[in-house]
Length: 247
Image (cartoon, rainbow, N blue to C red):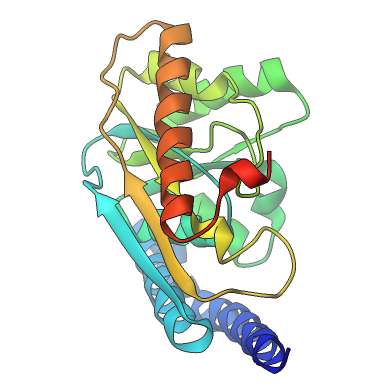
């Protein structure tokens, strides 16, 4: 009981520190970010890497990126369990842009930097219109090279839980004509969607073999889901979490 209480206190300190650090970095880099996208990228990369360092030393979460992170123009279809997998993916790719819910654009600090990075906001309440607008907005943003990160399930999903894969990733894959790189993770085992408690262990993000352009939509979605879910389950089992026990 005492070690768990200590870990909870460490987790609380960690959360206070990383959000205070986000505010400090956001303010310090704001003038640079407003006039140069490079400033926004540098600020976010600094935050991502320092947060992973703090996670290791305050709460005992070690971060490991496996596979080959893409550097060319691709769609990155990623498993999303935690805020941690976001920062791990962003730290590994050179020009990451995220598909994100529109409400985040109005969040202090986060909204400013998301806009400057070229992230694409979508209205999740209007599904058909949202997908059509997303493709148009993405085509506009890809006047500059980058890696477009989208979460095929549309939201964070707890380790071991099932949520269907949505069509948006396939529409982007078809419309842009880029390869799609699936990404698996077990980050939610240690940094859950809700609550303060952070558990020590090895958080992994794994870049898998790309799906080349030209695959038919249903087959693409099947291959994407199979790759991500199979590998994510394996990563969770590697650290002692059995996803089958949740089903």
